Amino acid sequence: ERGSLDPERHYEILCGELYEKLGRGWPHPFAITALALAFKNLDQERFCLMSQSSLRVGENLPEPDFIVLGGGLRGWRQTLTAKDVLLLVEVADTTFGLDSRVKAPMYAAAEIPVYWIVDIKRCRIEVHTRPESGQYAETRIFDSGQVLPPAFEGAPMVLVSDLFVVDEGPPAA
Image (tube, rainbow, N blue to C red; front, side):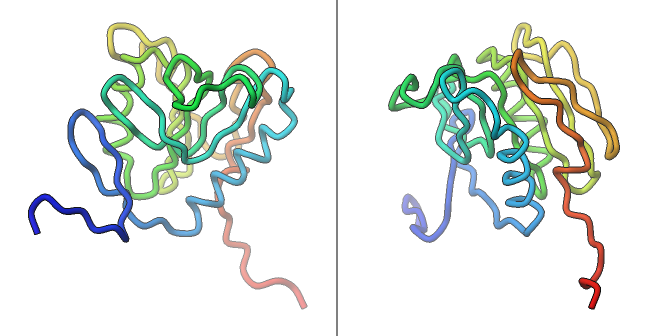
């Protein structure tokens, strides 16, 4: 029925539009968990990790897959805003177009300094940096086997292939 939302589905608001968050296969939560493990040794007094939490970006309310906030856990406000974010990551299994064409300019306009798109289908990561005038001035592609440089001071280097499921077949007997 027009005007009502299915309570069993999950949505986010982007650029005044309501987008349904699509179902995710195993590679999606795997990548998010791998990110959390890669960043787990950050100083908890200086940084806070969040996963799939709403973030106020102007009038938008996206739910990024992974963010690193400046300040410890006690330092963030009840509603997270773009100015709190040091690194924002979207994991794209079915949403690469939305993440690159809609979210990237939105995050750049909010001056989020580093935005990664983990591209599940291509096993690579797009790294967007230097937000200027609603666009990222620099975009670099990192393929499996390459190492991502630290996203901010104190951040770890991340091996791209660590974020992707590798089908190694059944366990040895």
